[in-house]
Amino acid sequence: MHGIEKYDNLKEIMPKLQPVLVEAIQSEFLEIKKINKECEKYIASCAQIPELKNAEYVIFSQHIKKNKHKNEIFVFIDGEGGIVRHVTGREMELYGLLASCTTLHVSEEFIETTARCDSDECRH
Image (cartoon, rainbow, N blue to C red):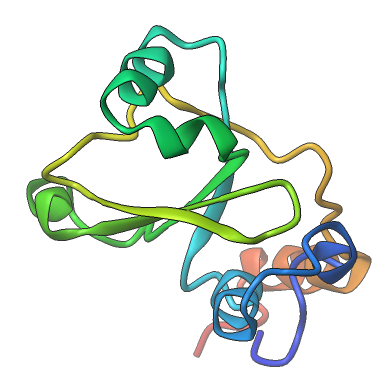
């Protein structure tokens, strides 16, 4: 699915997001999720890392195995895509902290391509 953007409004919603992060999200190399700000874990994390109060989303790799998460770096961004803080997996875990990004719209082309690939049409 190279060249097909997953989200057709990512650049509009997050105009300050670095191009390398845009490409990584669009190609599904990295994942973006909304932060559940009412979660106890988030509130506790803000007490330890005050900058996280300005974060709305987190970017991370969904491909890293659970036993390697301590070596991962999470990118916390604000509502416009500006980087708030990098946090390592040693500093915190994301489990229980995330919600879906309801402001991002999955493109029709991505949905169609994904549906075709799920039906074995894209497999060799």
